[in-house]
Amino acid sequence: MSETKAQMDTMDWQQLKLDMQAAAESLGIDKIRISSADPFVELKDILIRHREKGFESGFEEKDLDKRTDPSLSHAEPRSIISIAVAYPSKLTDAPRSEKGAYRGMLSRSAWGLDYHQVLRNRLQRLETWIRERVPDALLESMVDTGALVNRAVAERAGIGWTGKNCSIITPEFGSWVYLGEMITNLPLPSDQPVTESCGDCTLCIDACPTGALVGPGQLNAQRCISFITQTKGHIEDDEMKKKIGNRLYGCDTCQIVCPKNKGKHWTQHPELQPDPEQAKPLLLPLLHMTNREFKERFGTSSAAWRGRKPIQRNAILALGHFKDTSAVSVLSDLLLRDERPEIRSAAAWSLGQIGGEEAVLALQNAKEREQDPIVMKELEKSLCPSGS
Ligand code: SF4
Ligand code: SF4
Image 1 (cartoon, rainbow, N blue to C red):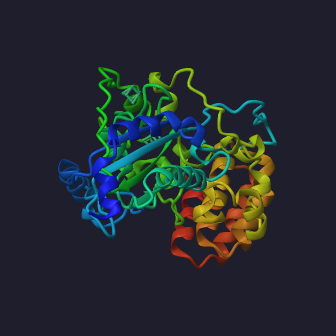
Image 2 (image 1 turned 45 degrees about the vertical axis):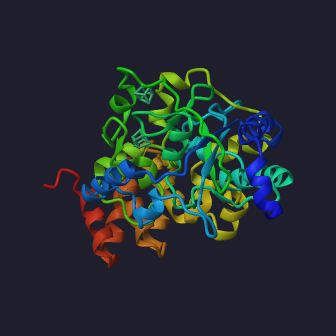
């Protein structure tokens, strides 16, 4: 019998699991639970229906088998280790948004250092811990970019339950947790799913500004502000532009209203703590940010993955939302000179929202020279809001 096989046969897996869970805090992890590595058969059916209804965001892994069937490169997967790292929900010393100095908001998941980096670090520490005890263990870690649906793994492992807002809600930390997982060939015994649930509550569904929660635990990503703020193109739906408000990246509304998150705010991971000026930045200085300035300012945040354009477009919409008259000259300049049509159409909408002589003049000037049909349509709507 090989040494590896002998170790696998004689190992006390229950004890290893308990030791691992006891070591979680020292590894910078808030919760570790184990699930089987069986395929997520029911989930696949749900994802097929979700796709048929056109509810996907477009950011998902396209191959549904990869998302629902755990696999390892060189062996049979025998268990999945699911981890949670809790993050802050409150901005202490938040700068005020006020007339002439309005501010936007990044969602909590974009505060502090990019959570992908933080989770990768935690999973690496966990891998080292396991290899010190089982040197030949096969371990494959995943953070978001992994194909497997991490919420399904977390639910089966007993990290939390899937709330009606589609977040994993842990009894200990609420839904303010990042999730990661590691597929292994170790036969670790499974934990039990949590028994707590949402009960009769529907607060998140009622509070969603766009009706994106089309049912309990069912999200139409095409209507979800969190996804829309991450797109790079034009936002043509006027209602949606209004509802985005001052959100620059992501949306936390359905988590903020959740009673299971009441009083939950986590400060144990220094690298996840927000810089208030980054989490709630002044809008006007964002508009002329170069790529280099964007990288310096937001490069370490998870909000940077789509580049600066979505954030600039959303900042323009936010100035329209605030009807900030002090922004008219900057917006007019963008409308007339920016090369990016998505930026010009957002500026046209915002100037229409702000109104006044100077804004109208800029819209008229732009109408004389604009070549892009979508920007032109926006200009016409802004100059003639009632369609008359
Ligand atoms: Fe609705 Fe915002 Fe939640 Fe999306 S993130 S479902 S838009 S409340
Ligand atoms: Fe569940 Fe209510 Fe929280 Fe929605 S707001 S996730 S229904 S507990």
